[in-house]
Amino acid sequence: MSITEECQADISSKLKEMNENTEYLTQQMPDLRKKYPNMFIAIFKKKLVGTDADYKNLLLMMRKKFGNIDTVLIEFINEEGYYFII
Picture 1 (tube, one colour):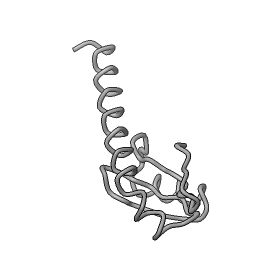
Picture 2: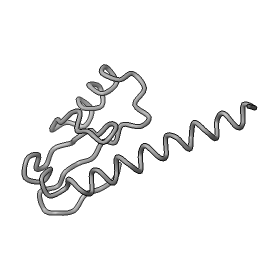
Picture 3: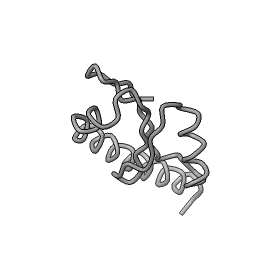
Picture 4: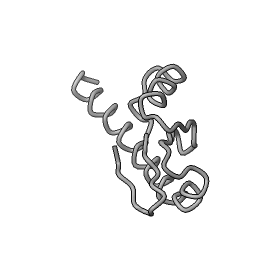
């Protein structure tokens, strides 16, 4: 396998995992809004793995916990019913 093929396979794998995390987020959003209003949450491999009111703190926690956070989805859960994908 060439370097280009390896890179494409790696990117494809990461995109697939991020899509799965996003689907999980969408499915869990009603419960997440109730439990974590106006908080940042982190999802990894379709599991909630961290929460914090401060984005930078959550980011540092995830880096400490996982090292590479390429496929950790971090989102702000807005109690008003809309959200932004960061």
